[in-house]
Length: 405
Length: 113
Image 1 (cartoon, chains in turn blue, green):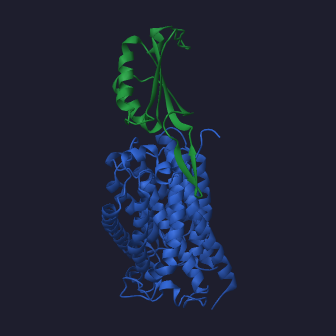
Image 2 (cartoon, chains in turn purple, brown; image 1 turned 90 degrees about the horizontal axis):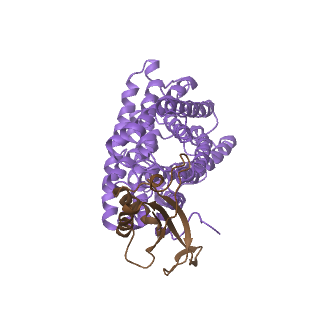
Image 3 (cartoon, chains in turn green, orange; image 1 turned 180 degrees about the vertical axis):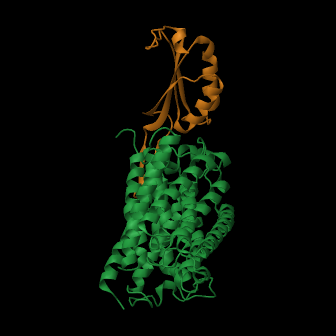
């Protein structure tokens, strides 16, 4: 049955998740050198455009179309055939609205990976990889976890708003990608922010958009919507302060970059749990996401020497894995879903671990194969001279900033 | 004492700086500059309209050296800066009359290093 209030909330949520991708562009754009700022904004805006079309043409059908053996959605709904305004069974919003809401998730997931290959990727290679990855990695994974009949859905894996499907998948793909493409010229493996205020603006609006992302994932207005809203805010706040305090102790000063990185880590960590846990649990989940993120960004990355330029793996991958497991620990049936460890259902942690493991293996294997394919056909990395000049001038023939008018 | 001003391609800065450091020259001033040379301008395209600008973005490196470091400094720049095409830049060399370290008041060769 169609419900007007639910529909209104989901229209707003969808628009809020849409804005997260251009917002992510500013978050990432601020963190790169100024000669590459446009390349980041460009990649994010083009992902928004190209995946929007991919989704209405065939992506939605692959991910959410009538189940084929628990593995894929098939082609029943390509070109949105049969996707009308009547709600799906068990939903209260128009089918096309559900399709649009899911579209924005499909858009932001490959956009997250942009942070791993920033400052050195060839635009054509990026474009081909994005379309293939979205179709062959994201769409099946979304089907397995979220679509009725998907094999992980049937196992009872809890993923409220996409911790496993989005953040683990993007984080692991980012890690594999950064190993394959190699380090940037002229930098170790740390970001070299040319405009931190851009990054803060981006992080602030990501926090805002995340209310649509998480509270919208309740697909309507119910108790769970508000739980997700409160948990999202609480986890982000706890994570921001956690990162700041660790930074203060370890690096002797509280930093702006640290706080916004913590915000994102907390938002990622609470994503799979948002509609299943209490606000007090969300403090622990947010703080845990920050701690893991900090360890991976500050210690593990320098140790292993991969250049995950903007810490997609450290922040999204690790906080995502923590969030997925933490959902199994802290979930409460009284709020939504099933009980977790602290409510006597230890088995849920194991179920969550299966989800994590599948996402890690599938993302790693998928990214490895697709990278090799794209590298063979169009090439993935710009040559060294172009990289030194910057992607803005060499890939797009535009400059982000002028020295003088 | 000499004062060296080198105008180079901006994307060569990292290589030049590394080469200078390999030759124990660590003190320098670097700035972004615009200039006209013999190189044709960069082409930028905005909404399909091509704009050619003949003021090009370059990087200026300024180094003050004692005479015994002078050759090394010039050689390092000559080694790392060129791409062997128009636009590689120029090196200007001046005799340096005096150098004073503000903190200590030291003068001349002592103050440069």
